[in-house]
Image (cartoon, rainbow, N blue to C red; front, side):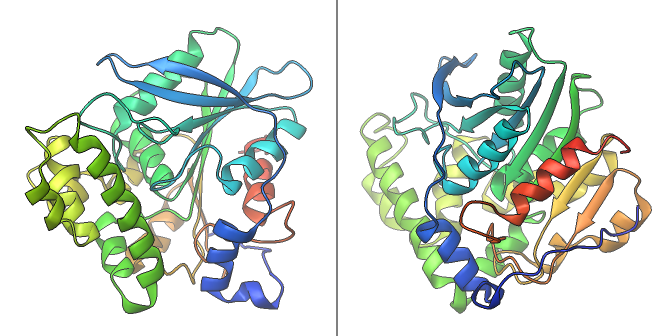
Length: 321
């Protein structure tokens, strides 16, 4: 499929990648959205919380939204996407990954960029409601990598899953770590690290035999967090083993349903591998759109409506795909 021509042209200040990224994450007014929380009990005894919002009319279509690193279903990008979908006939299940809903999860493991068994549990939970004939997936950043891996690593998945959208997605986890380690990304890098260290410290109380003060002191970078916690907690040899096995780029050729990957050229979180133009030009199901602007999840049009939100809706509703 040829590369998708983009129509995104933001106003002047939002052409700056860092302004677009920071404004969208920290300054955009939170969209007003009625949500209902439902707890999903996982097979291993842990839980995930899903924040539902609904179309005004009864719907047989549901979109599952997946947030990014240290995000949750209350982030403005999640609520903005949910609102436009609700207004256009979609129910929305906005997922909070383990430990991201405001309450610490119960198990030693938590979430990561490739933990597709948890996504599968969410999908099966929704299918058991026997209400929806169409399911679509929308993921942001880490959540985008998660859904692409899910779609590409399985030989089959429920027939109700029709399309997916991955926004600002690190298709190469190692490449994106290297990008985040650049000097100009120190604000984002430090913000993530502060949050992750805080969660680790809280979790130490429940798992003192696995999580110690000496390990905690080693967490001085995102790489070390993945070495100290992410890898051992989720069965990987080390951080690089985790990155290699879970980067979604390797799974893209196997995807059998229409998928839109929306990655801005000026997204400072992404490496060159996150723009697979040659692969997209050969695949019928991979639609790659790379606007010049947009930063990281920062596709501002107005405070009430972002380009990524309207573009996702357009893609999901396009019956010709």
